[in-house]
Amino acid sequence: MITVLEAQQKIKNQTLPLQVISLPLTDSLNYCLAEGIIAPVSIPLFNQSAMDGYAFNFEDIKNSLKIVAEIPAGDNRDFHINKNEAIRIFTGSKVPNCCDTVVMQELTEVINNELHIKDEGLKIGGNIRTKGNQIEKGTIALKKGTQINAGAIGFLSSLGLTTINVYQQPTITIIATGNELVKPGSELLAGQIFESNTFMLKAALQQKGIDSQIIIVEDNQKTTELAIKEALSNSDLLIISGGISVGDYDFVKESLENNNVKEVFYKVKQKPGKPLYFGKTDSCSIYALPGNPAAALSCFYEYVNTSINIMMGNNKVNLPQLNLPINKTYTKKAGRANFLKAYTDFKTVTPLDGQGSDALQAFSMANCLIYTTEEDTKICEGTVVEIHLLPQ
Image (tube, rainbow, N blue to C red):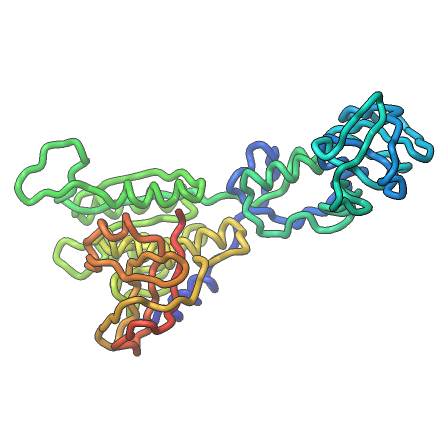
């Protein structure tokens, strides 16, 4: 059995980014950049008005100004003004080189085509977005490993890009084992439970923009082995739920061995999720998660999520971390690290009721996990603890 930190390091040592592909920018949501993006142009491309108003020279601010022209957005004509003259201008319009300031129209008065400026706080250069103010041509726009979101797509579009190089997303299969599992909506017989882990894990993957294939198998050596064999042949990542303990009907570990999966580690000094398994083939990473759903989800966020982020080339490998004071005393036995379902208001953090490895209700209310070390036994109210923020 190994520690949490040892397990996390072994995962990082055994995982590499997938291959690089070129995608249309419009299809790149949730992918991660395989290379840094160098800005091919400056943004703005020219001195740009930040609002509807009037462009003029600041030295004339106390005078009445004759309005001599109008510049709608997209107009690329050259303009020139003389002393005590101004130009009507609109948001996004190119500010002529002959003007150094824009006044917003609400703080002006126009009488007989004469502009009177009422903005007492206006300074030279006001309301002008200068060329390259957002980013200058030739500088880094986005770093390698940046995950593409809606804002990134808009930003890269504004640079004129239509395709980008990204890391391929992993192909993922989820296998759930258990004779007791019944699909929600079916009739339950005595001794059966509704299957939840595959729905939960699939949803966690969808939050990352990744689809997955689901297979449910009975607790049978042959069917388990065959399902694993098929999944290994067409997946970059295989997640197995249940069947990894040492009971008479737990066939996963033996089935993995029979499929030539190399064990990297099995069992971690943690609660929940002690019977966590991580293995490798030449082309696939394999996680066997505990069958208890809260334990499985904890292991997904703390370990599987790391593997996926590395495969995707994401430069943010682990869950975001904060250190905040706990607002009630918590006690535990020494010997195992704990991942406690918790809620934070980002001032303090509260461990939730229902910390059992089977209990998902607390997870539905949690926005973070409190991490306690193996050595911790009593964490007093007010003690600063490490928390891992969950995707929301």
